[in-house]
Length: 94
Image (cartoon, rainbow, N blue to C red; front, side, top):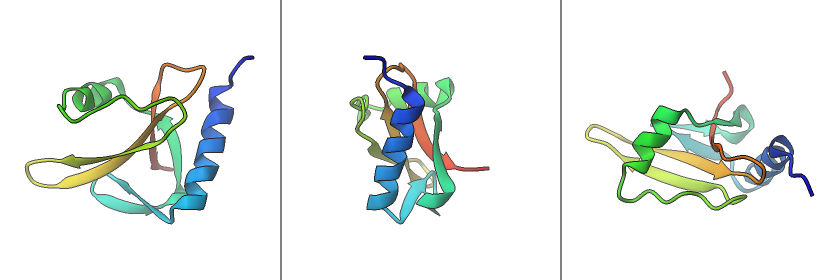
């Protein structure tokens, strides 16, 4: 059976919208209706992977990462889906 990454992302986004009203993205909270899954840039993924606390998300299970930085903290929700090696991040629609 062929898995369609975009269909999986739509299903995951619908589930996240049922469970959350606000989602952290970097240093701000955003309404979940104004967010969508986008590919996580390679540079950002490399930076996340360099953290000793980072674990690769399991396929189909969104993971909320809380990040600590020198001057601030923030969060990201990341996910991997069947049929894609890409890690996606839930980010504001712009």
